[in-house]
Length: 309
Image (cartoon, rainbow, N blue to C red; front, side, top):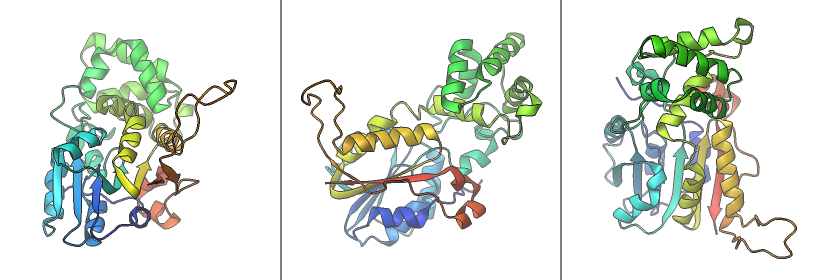
């Protein structure tokens, strides 16, 4: 299957990065390379792009999409490891970093990856197929309490307890192996009258995907690491797609502006808060009405930009 990906808020990201023709840029979520292609168009032969993705299929597709460009380095890794990636490449600082978080259109459309609640496919959901933990492992081996907490926290699903309970009842009969089996359990766990806000399995599938790929826990530190990797006036652009991601990015940005985190009753600061730069977007940028109509994935997207001092 062709790796299709409509880059969300493409123009806004390119403008936000303020690309220098001879600069070094990182696309930490390379995907189909939609954003990267536009970055490369603005770079001279002396500029450089580092494309990171944990999905090897994405990297293969990106190499094809960017085949006419010579100044690209492809890295199979996780953007959470950006400091190690740059260290291995012997690059100390970069001029800009882009992170387009969440699952790609291709991963959703490629049904055998198990990300989609449509159809019947093996429960997988791994962005990096070399890792061991899969959705099947989470669904069949996590305790009822742990499942419920994940579905509630990562999916913001009100019926998390009932869904977790019914998963555990069903898996005693037989292992839950396909997306359809899981969807059937979820649909039976949510009252019909409450199944009006999109597909009833949407939140639970999001939650399990986040758990499988560890998308939230390292994010706050990843944002801070990205800021550390920037040169002065370098820009960090991050697109998020749900409130948990957005909150982590927002809080990391605020801390990086030097906000004191000491208790208010302390007479002086002991946390060592230091301003590393400024937030460019006081409010997150959202996709235009036209883009939201043309690309449904952009409806929940928020872009936040930080500039290193």
